[in-house]
Length: 564
Image 1 (tube, rainbow, N blue to C red):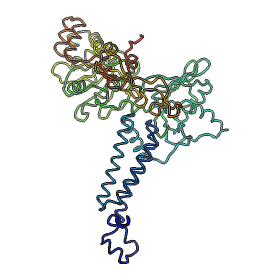
Image 2 (image 1 turned 30 degrees about the vertical axis):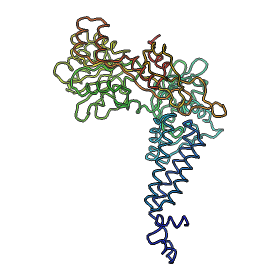
Image 3 (image 1 turned 120 degrees about the vertical axis):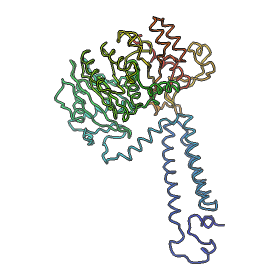
Image 4 (image 1 turned 45 degrees about the vertical axis):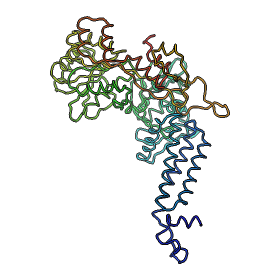
């Protein structure tokens, strides 16, 4: 029987198949428009999926040609079965089942190869492009950075002979490579004979190609013009914003300039407003740590010390904990030396730069006088301030105080708090919890290299003896089927991509207070910590090594003593 006739009940209007063959029908009466539309609405996204998978297979280091053949073959088979199976709805079900099978199979292969974590960002970028499209596009060539001024107007690429063409080219050399690698900061510092360009990705600095001091001066004027700054002012600090776009990704840049003996220094910060948006569950806490911290947050009263070394996520952790409180049902205020981000529903009080201890105490007492339920202070320097906070959160006041502190461990944080308060009984009476954190880089899921650790390595690192495979950063370039070196599109050959936190959390219970107030030794304090099933920072970090998230080398780098 002819396949088109067999498919008549699916795409054609009602009526007996024999009647269609025997009788004349009005023009257009054969096709059911709505059924055709339904089929097209399935086939169009399917075709888009095939196009995306073709590009993504290269990105994810999957066999592109083989996958294209399989996915396209699946589409052909699905269409054939759709036409062959009797009944429109049954044929439609066949299409959907095969489509779902192809999606699941591809994502399964991709998950094993490089994971699926980056797909969320791809989807958000695509969705953002749909919802925020404003018709303004940069005119930079492919692979370069398109710049927009503070009003959102695209800055045109100067002609080859234009006076500002050199400034544009130097700006591109500063920005393009760094922003393609997801740099969060770019520093340009003039030196004696040249200018050093350094960018930071996941907290690690990389040196870019040097440029001359004259070229830096030209690029600085170009960027200041885009940010709406006074390009004639070269001594006083200035700050402004501009926007950039690279590889389809939009970035807001904060431009900071300041004079120096060698010339004007510039710093570019990428997406400052997005730096501290993580919630508590996104920080990397273990399930036990998250439960303990969440429980403490929900309980009223007491001081909680939030600590970390410099550049290890203290502000992010501080803000994430504050966000756990319901800002619309709880009166929350902060006292910060330099608020890094606006917190919805929270009153943020700023301490001016260079505030002396007496002014810090006065401001703290003023906030306390507002009878806030939760008070967060980013840094405490005066004994009077620390004592006021301890008294405010102590007793039965049900007032919670969070204190930010630079420290390398929970034990160091406790020692600093005791010294700051100057009275162990007062310091420990209200102290509920101390948390200390670090951040380390995650291995690139696309190019990390597995290896089998020997038993002596596992014993030395106190790792699980049953671990059969760990990962490290590759030391050789990736190569294609012909043996030619190729870049890793996931990490841009940095070997690492993204960061995750690891933590040491100490609940201050009666036993901890007893050890401290009776002058107990560090060994006794650590024994009390162990009784809580607490994990030291190194142990928390090595759990990430066991899970394949990072390398032993990265843990050693992060936990290396300051100045060591």
